[in-house]
Length: 238
Ligand SMILES: Nc1ncnc2c1ncn2[C@@H]1O[C@H](COP(=O)(O)OP(=O)(O)O)[C@@H](O)[C@H]1O
Ligand SMILES: [Mg+2]
Image 1: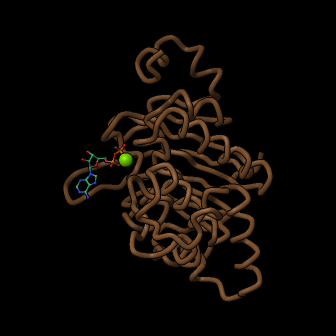
Image 2: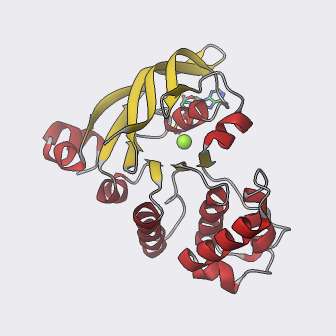
């Protein structure tokens, strides 16, 4: 598969803290790539560096072959990368509809936006049922679905999801991931999914990277990683 995003020998951090040191990873076009690792490993920093929210101090980031490191985050979004940040909240005092429209604020074709709202309500029927309700009244799982739908309203080619399973019941995790897989198949969406829940991420991904202390500790297909006893016991809780 062709590469949509490449992250090559990237180092990044906060002040004197080096959170990533020479991390390399590749996101295949049309695929689901997982980024796993314990708390503090640097997963969120990878996503924030892709989005231009944290500066790369070293290395190169390319999207569709073009350098994007050094670009402002708005510019990165306009190139077709959307992020659903970790634990990010919906706008509580706005309706579901208004939250979805905010996701499309960089677009200016009303017809296309209306059509995409219909498409999102098809994938996430609960959003249609709660369309005019304040988003703050939704449950945690419903808010996670709204966040994903809102990010998709920007019509990204690459969606970055930061711990979509966090705080959800096992049943809701299953539902959210089933919808993610449908979106990937039917909308030809490329995904990079950060998870601490390695089991669910490896169920849906075609390729995975494991980060430890800001470095890539292992990478491979889910089958290869699970079959490697050292990797499975150290990082996958198997
Ligand atoms: N805003 C920040 N300021 C200082 N250090 C940070 C900041 N954000 C993250 N870090 C540090 O960078 C490292 C990687 O964090 P992060 O990317 O959030 O890890 P993960 O998402 O894998 O839990 C950790 O040591 C964390 O404490
Ligand atoms: Mg994180």
